[in-house]
Picture (cartoon, rainbow, N blue to C red):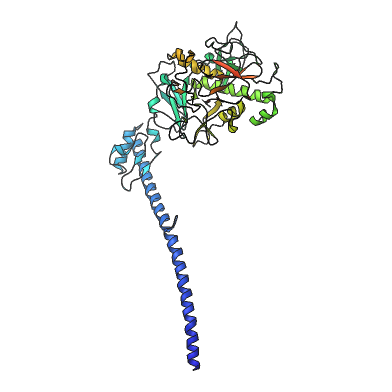
Length: 465
């Protein structure tokens, strides 16, 4: 009797233990299966490790093929390297190496990029891995060579200088090359006079006027007053009145007023504590830009008006299917680009995608750059387009940059005022110069004080460091 009771009790304990054991085993099994098959699980990691090993093996064979090609040829061509890739069994056919040097290996097949960059000639459609020179022999410009900055490619359909050569970054922002063969057509020194014109030359790394022994560089503007008078270059410079750049506007003929550029609220928005500090920065920015123009014989201007992709400044067609829901054409009403000050600041914030130490510097367009753009168009047969005042039929009045195909000259859109475009050029003591005013031509100048809101935007320019 006691034995039976004891037996039943032991039997009950065993069943509970069995259930618990089964539950634990199920839990452990599920954990093990998850560890094997889940994201980043053992099987996934093993697969990744296998791929890494196979890619590393192919890369080693590619490196050996390059070494063999360099042993056999003093300066091996891309075809020489391809032949060695065939010898190593990396490829069976030349077509497995595309125009950008990307190799599609034999089985196990992978696309391997970057190994043949030194053997692929730079040209339209290929992103520059460093600053690259591209020569357009068909151009009628004096200098036929363009420097394409790292991180950009030349659009294959827009590779002619005379038609407006277009470069594009990896985010889709586009810029047009403006050739300037002689900096004296675009800039002068602060001591310029009507009797002795400047001669700017690069002395080492210093841009200097040899006529007046001056290193203070200012804009040469192709107008003597606002309005429709493009073509007559100014031959004097007054730091506090008239059309001029670089300059501040403070409501004072001495440049020491407390309005606009003299207001600490706007100065602090730009990161400055005094007007003189801001003016000094503008002078340095202008001289740095002009020095680059001498070295590289030109600069780049935004193909489109300043756009915003979130907080990021871009130069994109805001009307295309891929951009219309994410790119907004900037204006002086937008809190991110409020007034002239917000637009100026945003133009400075452009960054080349995927490049840590960019070889270009961005800016709001200077008045002398706008005039250089007009003069380039004039040289290339567009004089009537840049000076005509009857352009309402072709004008893009949608406030969406790039939306109208007729509002384009030399691949640059919206010069007839999708938005009125502010520049860095100053006029009088209280205004900055605007271009593309209503139905006027792009060469027409008008002016607004820098806290005006409404249909005002600007355009990014790039120059090479």
